[in-house]
Amino acid sequence: MRQREMSTKFNQSFKLQAVEKALKKAPGTNMQEMAASLGVGYSTLQRWISEARTGNEKATAGVDSMSLQQEKRPQDWSLEARLEMIIHCAGMESELANQACREQGIYPHHLKQWRQDFVKVMAVNNKTADGEVRKLKQENNELKKDLNRKNKALAEAAALIVLQKKVSALWSNDEAGSQ
Image (cartoon, rainbow, N blue to C red; front, side):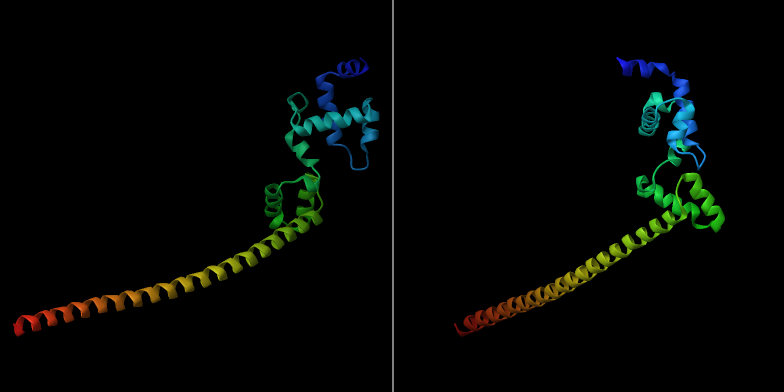
């Protein structure tokens, strides 16, 4: 009963404003102070933010999706999003890259680590690909040798058939001539 009263105490507009304010809080402010300043419980504010992040339509209506994206932890970023951010910041000067990182809620060292991770994965994939190429070349060479061996056997068989026909023709001529 108490929880029902709590959920109806705040209207949707207030919840949206609280989530937006919490997501755009000053760097020195923590969430408990933010919740106290809004007059809501810390866990309630956390639940509203969580609902907004998970895509709850009631919670996200009117909330800027970029605000939610900024609050993602670095480990929550998908590989595609990481690569897009690396590419986005690749040509930037250090200061601009730092600012872009801050806007997304990450640090420049995250970009460096992600770049190293991609390079490491590519190196492993290249080694695996090199091994596969070597294996395929070896298999190809074995198949060529086998094909050459079979071609030689076929040529020998054809030569034997031709010789057999000539011998048969000679013997049949000799038998016809002796009678």
